[in-house]
Image (cartoon, rainbow, N blue to C red; front, side, top):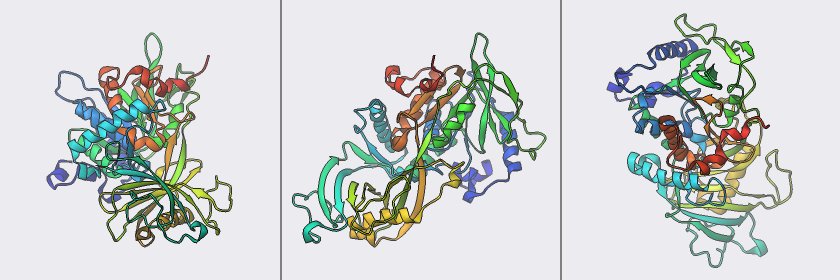
Length: 470
Protein backbone atom coordinates (compact mmCIF):
# COMPACT_ATOMS: atom_id res chain seq x y z
CA UNK A 1 0.00 0.00 0.00
CA UNK A 2 2.94 2.31 0.71
CA UNK A 3 4.36 1.90 -2.80
CA UNK A 4 1.02 2.70 -4.42
CA UNK A 5 0.55 5.68 -2.14
CA UNK A 6 3.96 6.98 -3.20
CA UNK A 7 2.86 6.75 -6.82
CA UNK A 8 -0.20 8.84 -6.08
CA UNK A 9 -2.96 6.23 -6.31
CA UNK A 10 -6.07 6.98 -4.26
CA UNK A 11 -6.85 4.63 -1.33
CA UNK A 12 -9.74 3.06 -3.23
CA UNK A 13 -7.68 2.64 -6.40
CA UNK A 14 -5.09 0.83 -4.33
CA UNK A 15 -7.68 -1.79 -3.40
CA UNK A 16 -9.66 -1.93 -6.66
CA UNK A 17 -7.32 -1.16 -9.58
CA UNK A 18 -9.31 -1.05 -12.82
CA UNK A 19 -12.01 -3.45 -11.61
CA UNK A 20 -9.36 -6.16 -11.16
CA UNK A 21 -10.88 -9.32 -9.70
CA UNK A 22 -8.21 -10.75 -7.43
CA UNK A 23 -8.07 -14.57 -7.37
CA UNK A 24 -9.57 -16.24 -4.31
CA UNK A 25 -6.15 -17.33 -3.09
CA UNK A 26 -5.00 -13.70 -3.06
CA UNK A 27 -8.10 -12.62 -1.15
CA UNK A 28 -7.54 -15.37 1.41
CA UNK A 29 -3.91 -14.36 1.80
CA UNK A 30 -4.88 -10.73 2.33
CA UNK A 31 -7.46 -11.82 4.89
CA UNK A 32 -4.84 -13.93 6.68
CA UNK A 33 -2.43 -11.02 6.91
CA UNK A 34 -5.12 -8.66 8.16
CA UNK A 35 -6.43 -11.12 10.71
CA UNK A 36 -2.98 -11.71 12.16
CA UNK A 37 -2.38 -7.97 12.40
CA UNK A 38 -5.79 -7.06 13.83
CA UNK A 39 -5.78 -5.40 17.21
CA UNK A 40 -2.24 -4.05 16.94
CA UNK A 41 -1.19 -0.51 17.73
CA UNK A 42 0.66 1.48 20.34
CA UNK A 43 -2.27 3.39 21.81
CA UNK A 44 -2.89 2.73 25.50
CA UNK A 45 -6.64 2.87 24.93
CA UNK A 46 -7.80 -0.23 23.05
CA UNK A 47 -9.39 0.49 19.70
CA UNK A 48 -12.34 -1.80 18.94
CA UNK A 49 -11.98 -4.04 15.92
CA UNK A 50 -14.94 -3.01 13.77
CA UNK A 51 -15.87 -4.92 10.62
CA UNK A 52 -18.33 -3.07 8.39
CA UNK A 53 -20.07 -5.45 6.00
CA UNK A 54 -20.98 -3.54 2.83
CA UNK A 55 -19.26 -0.82 0.81
CA UNK A 56 -22.31 1.29 0.00
CA UNK A 57 -23.36 4.65 1.39
CA UNK A 58 -24.22 3.34 4.88
CA UNK A 59 -20.93 1.46 5.27
CA UNK A 60 -18.94 4.39 3.93
CA UNK A 61 -20.64 6.89 6.24
CA UNK A 62 -20.06 4.63 9.23
CA UNK A 63 -16.37 4.28 8.37
CA UNK A 64 -16.02 8.04 7.93
CA UNK A 65 -17.58 8.95 11.26
CA UNK A 66 -15.62 6.27 13.10
CA UNK A 67 -12.50 7.84 11.61
CA UNK A 68 -13.70 11.25 12.79
CA UNK A 69 -13.79 9.79 16.31
CA UNK A 70 -10.22 8.49 16.05
CA UNK A 71 -11.16 4.84 15.56
CA UNK A 72 -10.09 4.48 11.91
CA UNK A 73 -7.24 2.05 12.58
CA UNK A 74 -9.60 -0.54 14.00
CA UNK A 75 -12.01 -0.46 11.03
CA UNK A 76 -12.12 -2.96 8.18
CA UNK A 77 -14.78 -2.53 5.51
CA UNK A 78 -15.62 -5.69 3.52
CA UNK A 79 -17.16 -5.39 0.07
CA UNK A 80 -17.85 -8.23 -2.34
CA UNK A 81 -17.59 -6.10 -5.47
CA UNK A 82 -16.44 -2.51 -5.75
CA UNK A 83 -17.50 0.31 -3.44
CA UNK A 84 -20.87 1.78 -4.43
CA UNK A 85 -21.43 -1.04 -6.94
CA UNK A 86 -25.17 -1.28 -6.18
CA UNK A 87 -27.80 1.37 -5.34
CA UNK A 88 -25.22 3.66 -3.70
CA UNK A 89 -23.60 4.16 -7.10
CA UNK A 90 -26.75 4.14 -9.21
CA UNK A 91 -29.24 6.21 -7.19
CA UNK A 92 -30.26 9.76 -8.00
CA UNK A 93 -28.92 11.55 -4.93
CA UNK A 94 -31.90 13.83 -4.25
CA UNK A 95 -31.99 15.33 -0.74
CA UNK A 96 -34.96 16.90 1.07
CA UNK A 97 -34.99 18.57 4.47
CA UNK A 98 -38.61 18.08 5.53
CA UNK A 99 -40.32 15.66 3.17
CA UNK A 100 -40.29 12.94 5.85
CA UNK A 101 -41.65 15.11 8.67
CA UNK A 102 -44.96 13.23 8.76
CA UNK A 103 -43.23 9.89 9.44
CA UNK A 104 -40.85 8.56 12.11
CA UNK A 105 -38.02 9.18 9.62
CA UNK A 106 -38.44 12.96 9.97
CA UNK A 107 -35.85 13.65 12.72
CA UNK A 108 -33.32 11.33 11.07
CA UNK A 109 -33.78 13.08 7.71
CA UNK A 110 -33.41 16.56 9.17
CA UNK A 111 -30.21 15.56 10.97
CA UNK A 112 -28.83 13.94 7.85
CA UNK A 113 -29.69 16.88 5.61
CA UNK A 114 -27.58 19.11 7.86
CA UNK A 115 -24.75 16.57 7.82
CA UNK A 116 -24.72 16.60 4.01
CA UNK A 117 -24.07 20.34 4.15
CA UNK A 118 -21.22 19.77 6.59
CA UNK A 119 -19.73 17.03 4.43
CA UNK A 120 -19.82 19.33 1.41
CA UNK A 121 -17.92 21.95 3.40
CA UNK A 122 -15.45 19.38 4.72
CA UNK A 123 -14.80 17.28 1.60
CA UNK A 124 -15.67 19.80 -1.12
CA UNK A 125 -19.06 20.40 -2.73
CA UNK A 126 -17.70 20.05 -6.27
CA UNK A 127 -16.01 16.78 -5.37
CA UNK A 128 -19.31 15.38 -4.06
CA UNK A 129 -21.57 16.87 -6.74
CA UNK A 130 -23.44 18.70 -3.99
CA UNK A 131 -25.61 21.79 -4.46
CA UNK A 132 -28.93 23.26 -3.40
CA UNK A 133 -31.60 22.87 -6.07
CA UNK A 134 -35.05 23.97 -7.20
CA UNK A 135 -37.61 21.17 -7.17
CA UNK A 136 -40.78 21.07 -9.26
CA UNK A 137 -43.77 18.79 -9.65
CA UNK A 138 -44.48 18.61 -13.38
CA UNK A 139 -47.49 16.97 -15.03
CA UNK A 140 -46.98 16.13 -18.68
CA UNK A 141 -48.68 14.28 -21.49
CA UNK A 142 -47.18 12.67 -24.54
CA UNK A 143 -49.91 14.15 -26.77
CA UNK A 144 -51.40 17.56 -25.82
CA UNK A 145 -55.17 17.71 -25.33
CA UNK A 146 -57.39 19.50 -27.82
CA UNK A 147 -54.61 20.09 -30.33
CA UNK A 148 -52.75 22.34 -27.92
CA UNK A 149 -49.50 21.83 -29.75
CA UNK A 150 -46.38 22.87 -27.85
CA UNK A 151 -47.91 25.83 -25.98
CA UNK A 152 -46.56 26.30 -22.49
CA UNK A 153 -48.86 26.07 -19.52
CA UNK A 154 -50.45 29.38 -18.48
CA UNK A 155 -48.88 30.57 -15.24
CA UNK A 156 -45.84 28.32 -15.62
CA UNK A 157 -43.31 31.14 -15.67
CA UNK A 158 -41.15 29.27 -13.17
CA UNK A 159 -40.65 26.36 -15.54
CA UNK A 160 -37.09 26.45 -16.91
CA UNK A 161 -36.76 27.07 -20.64
CA UNK A 162 -35.35 23.61 -21.31
CA UNK A 163 -38.64 22.01 -20.20
CA UNK A 164 -40.28 22.75 -23.55
CA UNK A 165 -42.61 19.76 -23.92
CA UNK A 166 -46.30 19.19 -23.26
CA UNK A 167 -46.71 20.31 -19.63
CA UNK A 168 -50.28 20.64 -18.37
CA UNK A 169 -49.58 21.30 -14.70
CA UNK A 170 -46.76 22.27 -12.35
CA UNK A 171 -46.10 23.32 -8.77
CA UNK A 172 -43.07 24.18 -6.67
CA UNK A 173 -41.94 21.52 -4.20
CA UNK A 174 -38.70 22.98 -2.89
CA UNK A 175 -35.92 25.50 -3.34
CA UNK A 176 -32.18 25.56 -2.51
CA UNK A 177 -32.98 26.21 1.16
CA UNK A 178 -34.71 22.86 1.65
CA UNK A 179 -33.83 20.59 -1.30
CA UNK A 180 -30.41 19.62 -2.61
CA UNK A 181 -28.58 16.91 -4.48
CA UNK A 182 -25.36 14.96 -4.33
CA UNK A 183 -23.67 12.50 -6.69
CA UNK A 184 -24.06 9.18 -4.81
CA UNK A 185 -21.02 7.41 -6.26
CA UNK A 186 -18.76 10.41 -5.68
CA UNK A 187 -20.04 10.84 -2.13
CA UNK A 188 -19.61 7.17 -1.22
CA UNK A 189 -16.08 6.91 -2.57
CA UNK A 190 -15.03 10.21 -0.99
CA UNK A 191 -16.25 9.04 2.43
CA UNK A 192 -14.38 5.76 2.04
CA UNK A 193 -11.20 7.59 1.09
CA UNK A 194 -11.67 9.78 4.16
CA UNK A 195 -11.51 6.67 6.34
CA UNK A 196 -8.80 4.85 4.38
CA UNK A 197 -6.38 7.76 4.48
CA UNK A 198 -6.62 7.68 8.27
CA UNK A 199 -5.84 4.00 8.67
CA UNK A 200 -8.98 2.01 7.90
CA UNK A 201 -8.79 -1.02 5.60
CA UNK A 202 -10.84 -2.06 2.59
CA UNK A 203 -11.10 -5.80 1.91
CA UNK A 204 -12.69 -7.50 -1.07
CA UNK A 205 -14.58 -10.60 -0.01
CA UNK A 206 -17.98 -12.18 0.52
CA UNK A 207 -19.40 -11.99 4.04
CA UNK A 208 -20.87 -15.38 4.93
CA UNK A 209 -21.71 -15.11 8.61
CA UNK A 210 -20.63 -14.17 12.11
CA UNK A 211 -18.66 -15.96 14.78
CA UNK A 212 -20.43 -15.62 18.13
CA UNK A 213 -19.71 -16.79 21.64
CA UNK A 214 -21.81 -17.02 24.77
CA UNK A 215 -21.61 -14.26 27.35
CA UNK A 216 -21.64 -15.08 31.03
CA UNK A 217 -25.03 -14.16 32.43
CA UNK A 218 -26.83 -14.65 29.10
CA UNK A 219 -26.74 -13.52 25.53
CA UNK A 220 -24.01 -13.75 22.95
CA UNK A 221 -21.37 -11.46 21.48
CA UNK A 222 -19.53 -11.02 18.22
CA UNK A 223 -15.96 -12.32 18.03
CA UNK A 224 -15.49 -12.45 14.27
CA UNK A 225 -16.91 -12.11 10.77
CA UNK A 226 -16.67 -15.00 8.31
CA UNK A 227 -15.33 -13.78 4.96
CA UNK A 228 -14.71 -16.25 2.13
CA UNK A 229 -14.59 -19.11 4.61
CA UNK A 230 -12.09 -17.46 6.97
CA UNK A 231 -12.64 -15.55 10.20
CA UNK A 232 -11.76 -11.89 10.49
CA UNK A 233 -11.54 -11.16 14.24
CA UNK A 234 -13.98 -8.48 15.34
CA UNK A 235 -15.44 -6.88 18.44
CA UNK A 236 -18.15 -5.15 16.39
CA UNK A 237 -19.90 -6.17 13.18
CA UNK A 238 -22.04 -3.70 11.24
CA UNK A 239 -24.34 -5.34 8.69
CA UNK A 240 -24.98 -2.75 5.97
CA UNK A 241 -25.56 -4.96 2.94
CA UNK A 242 -28.51 -3.10 1.46
CA UNK A 243 -31.15 -5.45 0.02
CA UNK A 244 -28.89 -8.40 0.86
CA UNK A 245 -28.96 -7.65 4.60
CA UNK A 246 -31.78 -10.13 5.17
CA UNK A 247 -29.21 -12.94 5.10
CA UNK A 248 -28.14 -11.78 8.56
CA UNK A 249 -31.34 -13.25 10.00
CA UNK A 250 -29.50 -16.59 10.03
CA UNK A 251 -26.33 -15.09 11.51
CA UNK A 252 -27.82 -13.70 14.73
CA UNK A 253 -28.42 -16.71 16.97
CA UNK A 254 -29.23 -17.23 20.62
CA UNK A 255 -28.30 -20.29 22.71
CA UNK A 256 -26.50 -22.75 20.42
CA UNK A 257 -28.10 -26.10 19.76
CA UNK A 258 -26.58 -27.33 16.51
CA UNK A 259 -22.98 -27.23 15.30
CA UNK A 260 -22.32 -26.79 11.59
CA UNK A 261 -19.43 -25.75 9.36
CA UNK A 262 -19.68 -23.02 6.73
CA UNK A 263 -20.68 -24.63 3.46
CA UNK A 264 -18.89 -22.06 1.34
CA UNK A 265 -15.40 -22.24 2.89
CA UNK A 266 -12.74 -22.29 0.20
CA UNK A 267 -10.69 -25.45 -0.14
CA UNK A 268 -8.01 -23.43 -1.94
CA UNK A 269 -7.24 -21.18 1.02
CA UNK A 270 -3.56 -21.10 2.04
CA UNK A 271 -2.65 -23.12 5.12
CA UNK A 272 -1.81 -19.89 6.93
CA UNK A 273 -5.38 -18.61 6.51
CA UNK A 274 -7.47 -18.67 9.73
CA UNK A 275 -10.12 -21.12 8.60
CA UNK A 276 -13.53 -20.59 10.13
CA UNK A 277 -14.19 -22.82 13.16
CA UNK A 278 -17.53 -24.57 13.60
CA UNK A 279 -20.35 -22.05 13.90
CA UNK A 280 -22.73 -22.60 16.81
CA UNK A 281 -26.29 -22.37 15.60
CA UNK A 282 -29.40 -21.80 17.67
CA UNK A 283 -32.79 -20.11 17.44
CA UNK A 284 -32.59 -16.87 15.44
CA UNK A 285 -32.69 -13.68 17.46
CA UNK A 286 -34.58 -11.85 14.71
CA UNK A 287 -36.84 -14.51 13.16
CA UNK A 288 -39.11 -11.91 11.54
CA UNK A 289 -36.33 -9.94 9.86
CA UNK A 290 -37.09 -9.64 6.15
CA UNK A 291 -35.42 -7.24 3.73
CA UNK A 292 -36.68 -7.07 0.17
CA UNK A 293 -35.71 -4.89 -2.78
CA UNK A 294 -37.54 -2.57 -5.14
CA UNK A 295 -35.91 -2.43 -8.55
CA UNK A 296 -35.48 0.86 -10.39
CA UNK A 297 -34.04 1.54 -13.82
CA UNK A 298 -32.17 4.72 -14.68
CA UNK A 299 -30.32 6.35 -17.53
CA UNK A 300 -27.70 9.10 -17.52
CA UNK A 301 -27.94 11.52 -20.46
CA UNK A 302 -25.51 14.17 -21.69
CA UNK A 303 -27.53 17.02 -23.30
CA UNK A 304 -25.68 19.30 -25.69
CA UNK A 305 -27.07 22.47 -24.11
CA UNK A 306 -26.83 23.59 -20.46
CA UNK A 307 -29.63 22.44 -18.17
CA UNK A 308 -30.52 24.37 -15.00
CA UNK A 309 -30.67 23.02 -11.45
CA UNK A 310 -34.38 22.13 -11.54
CA UNK A 311 -35.27 18.65 -10.29
CA UNK A 312 -38.46 17.33 -11.88
CA UNK A 313 -40.85 14.94 -10.14
CA UNK A 314 -43.18 14.04 -12.95
CA UNK A 315 -46.59 12.64 -13.56
CA UNK A 316 -46.74 11.63 -17.19
CA UNK A 317 -49.48 10.05 -19.28
CA UNK A 318 -48.57 8.09 -22.37
CA UNK A 319 -50.59 8.44 -25.54
CA UNK A 320 -51.92 5.37 -27.37
CA UNK A 321 -49.26 2.92 -28.45
CA UNK A 322 -48.49 1.97 -24.88
CA UNK A 323 -44.86 1.03 -24.19
CA UNK A 324 -44.12 -2.16 -22.27
CA UNK A 325 -44.99 -1.97 -18.58
CA UNK A 326 -43.01 -3.54 -15.73
CA UNK A 327 -44.17 -7.04 -14.88
CA UNK A 328 -45.72 -5.74 -11.65
CA UNK A 329 -47.95 -3.23 -13.50
CA UNK A 330 -51.08 -4.44 -15.32
CA UNK A 331 -51.16 -3.13 -18.89
CA UNK A 332 -53.72 -0.41 -19.61
CA UNK A 333 -54.10 2.16 -22.36
CA UNK A 334 -52.68 5.56 -21.47
CA UNK A 335 -50.56 4.34 -18.58
CA UNK A 336 -49.42 7.08 -16.17
CA UNK A 337 -45.86 6.94 -14.87
CA UNK A 338 -43.73 9.06 -12.53
CA UNK A 339 -40.09 9.25 -13.67
CA UNK A 340 -37.77 11.65 -11.88
CA UNK A 341 -35.36 13.93 -13.74
CA UNK A 342 -32.24 15.19 -11.95
CA UNK A 343 -29.83 17.52 -13.79
CA UNK A 344 -26.36 17.33 -12.22
CA UNK A 345 -23.64 19.97 -11.77
CA UNK A 346 -21.36 18.16 -14.25
CA UNK A 347 -23.85 18.77 -17.10
CA UNK A 348 -25.34 15.27 -17.16
CA UNK A 349 -29.00 14.45 -16.45
CA UNK A 350 -30.07 11.42 -14.43
CA UNK A 351 -33.54 10.01 -15.14
CA UNK A 352 -35.06 7.10 -13.19
CA UNK A 353 -38.35 5.25 -12.98
CA UNK A 354 -40.23 2.03 -13.78
CA UNK A 355 -40.21 0.53 -10.25
CA UNK A 356 -40.58 -3.25 -9.99
CA UNK A 357 -41.12 -5.58 -7.02
CA UNK A 358 -38.87 -8.49 -7.97
CA UNK A 359 -36.71 -11.01 -6.09
CA UNK A 360 -33.25 -9.64 -5.35
CA UNK A 361 -30.48 -11.49 -7.25
CA UNK A 362 -27.67 -13.16 -5.25
CA UNK A 363 -25.27 -10.24 -5.82
CA UNK A 364 -24.99 -6.82 -7.44
CA UNK A 365 -23.32 -8.43 -10.44
CA UNK A 366 -26.58 -10.29 -11.13
CA UNK A 367 -28.70 -7.15 -11.55
CA UNK A 368 -30.01 -7.03 -15.13
CA UNK A 369 -31.04 -4.05 -17.23
CA UNK A 370 -34.22 -4.25 -19.31
CA UNK A 371 -33.79 -2.15 -22.43
CA UNK A 372 -37.53 -1.65 -22.94
CA UNK A 373 -37.87 0.01 -19.55
CA UNK A 374 -34.92 2.30 -20.20
CA UNK A 375 -36.59 3.23 -23.50
CA UNK A 376 -39.77 4.08 -21.56
CA UNK A 377 -37.83 6.42 -19.28
CA UNK A 378 -36.18 8.09 -22.26
CA UNK A 379 -39.55 8.50 -23.94
CA UNK A 380 -40.89 10.45 -20.97
CA UNK A 381 -37.78 12.60 -20.63
CA UNK A 382 -37.77 13.37 -24.34
CA UNK A 383 -41.44 14.33 -24.33
CA UNK A 384 -40.84 16.82 -21.51
CA UNK A 385 -37.64 18.31 -22.91
CA UNK A 386 -36.40 18.21 -26.49
CA UNK A 387 -32.80 18.58 -25.34
CA UNK A 388 -33.17 15.26 -23.51
CA UNK A 389 -34.77 13.56 -26.51
CA UNK A 390 -31.63 14.33 -28.50
CA UNK A 391 -29.10 13.73 -25.70
CA UNK A 392 -26.58 10.88 -26.02
CA UNK A 393 -26.67 8.20 -23.34
CA UNK A 394 -23.78 7.73 -20.94
CA UNK A 395 -25.13 4.87 -18.81
CA UNK A 396 -28.04 2.44 -18.66
CA UNK A 397 -28.38 0.81 -15.25
CA UNK A 398 -30.64 -0.72 -12.61
CA UNK A 399 -30.47 -1.29 -8.87
CA UNK A 400 -32.51 -2.56 -5.92
CA UNK A 401 -33.52 -0.30 -3.02
CA UNK A 402 -33.64 -2.12 0.37
CA UNK A 403 -37.04 -2.23 2.05
CA UNK A 404 -38.21 -3.56 5.43
CA UNK A 405 -41.80 -4.87 5.75
CA UNK A 406 -42.98 -1.72 7.55
CA UNK A 407 -41.16 0.66 5.20
CA UNK A 408 -38.90 2.04 7.96
CA UNK A 409 -35.10 1.80 8.20
CA UNK A 410 -33.49 -0.83 10.41
CA UNK A 411 -30.80 0.89 12.47
CA UNK A 412 -29.18 -0.09 15.74
CA UNK A 413 -27.84 -2.88 17.94
CA UNK A 414 -29.19 -6.40 17.67
CA UNK A 415 -30.76 -7.33 21.03
CA UNK A 416 -29.13 -10.33 22.65
CA UNK A 417 -25.98 -10.13 20.49
CA UNK A 418 -23.41 -7.69 21.84
CA UNK A 419 -21.35 -5.98 19.15
CA UNK A 420 -23.81 -6.68 16.32
CA UNK A 421 -25.48 -3.80 14.48
CA UNK A 422 -27.92 -3.61 11.57
CA UNK A 423 -28.24 -0.69 9.16
CA UNK A 424 -30.49 -1.25 6.16
CA UNK A 425 -34.01 -0.74 4.78
CA UNK A 426 -33.63 2.94 3.87
CA UNK A 427 -35.74 2.62 0.68
CA UNK A 428 -35.37 5.57 -1.71
CA UNK A 429 -33.93 7.76 1.06
CA UNK A 430 -30.68 5.84 1.56
CA UNK A 431 -28.44 8.58 0.19
CA UNK A 432 -30.25 11.25 2.19
CA UNK A 433 -30.14 9.33 5.48
CA UNK A 434 -26.72 7.72 5.07
CA UNK A 435 -24.72 10.35 6.99
CA UNK A 436 -27.06 10.38 10.01
CA UNK A 437 -27.12 6.57 10.09
CA UNK A 438 -23.33 6.38 9.95
CA UNK A 439 -22.91 9.02 12.67
CA UNK A 440 -25.37 7.30 15.00
CA UNK A 441 -23.69 3.93 14.52
CA UNK A 442 -20.30 5.50 15.25
CA UNK A 443 -21.71 7.00 18.45
CA UNK A 444 -23.17 3.66 19.49
CA UNK A 445 -19.85 1.92 18.86
CA UNK A 446 -17.72 4.54 20.61
CA UNK A 447 -19.92 5.49 23.57
CA UNK A 448 -22.53 2.75 23.84
CA UNK A 449 -25.42 5.06 22.98
CA UNK A 450 -26.25 7.66 20.31
CA UNK A 451 -26.15 11.34 21.20
CA UNK A 452 -27.12 13.07 17.93
CA UNK A 453 -30.67 11.74 17.99
CA UNK A 454 -32.88 10.72 20.91
CA UNK A 455 -33.36 7.05 21.74
CA UNK A 456 -37.12 7.62 21.67
CA UNK A 457 -36.87 8.92 18.12
CA UNK A 458 -34.73 5.95 17.11
CA UNK A 459 -37.04 3.39 18.67
CA UNK A 460 -39.05 2.95 15.48
CA UNK A 461 -35.90 1.77 13.68
CA UNK A 462 -34.79 -0.80 16.25
CA UNK A 463 -33.90 -4.27 14.91
CA UNK A 464 -35.70 -5.54 18.02
CA UNK A 465 -39.03 -5.11 16.26
CA UNK A 466 -38.17 -8.28 14.32
CA UNK A 467 -37.46 -10.36 17.44
CA UNK A 468 -39.57 -13.32 18.51
CA UNK A 469 -42.94 -12.25 19.85
CA UNK A 470 -44.13 -13.50 23.21
